Image (cartoon, rainbow, N blue to C red; front, side):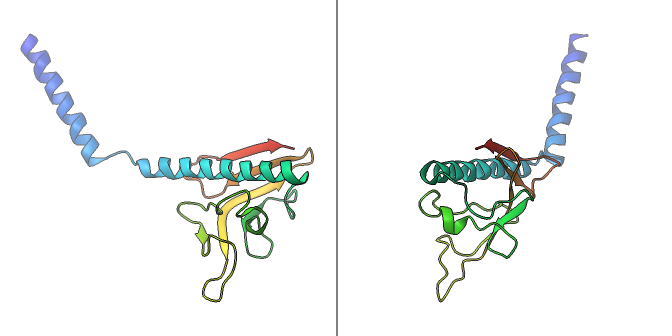
Length: 146
């Protein structure tokens, strides 16, 4: 009888090991979502430092969520926050676009960017940052009231 238990345990371990190789857990999605959370925290901290220095929030933040980016209808935080409050603008690890980290267009390189993060300000002054490209159904959001 003890031999049978040992054989069953060995077979179970072998099956579990084989399944992990056949169907490994994808940690890449979890890693990208963690990066998104860190990016939103970084942007939130930069906005807080800007607010502490100037007594106001960066321009163009409205009640309607808008993408943080350089295109029209986006909120361009780069010119207001880089390099004094942020080293560069963090962009989504999978879908974000950053052509020039300095936010200064040059003859050879434009300063276009699209973070794939949104920002909005609620009526009570709360700033809401969202990662719109979050994966696996995860909602990634940071809220800070000013």
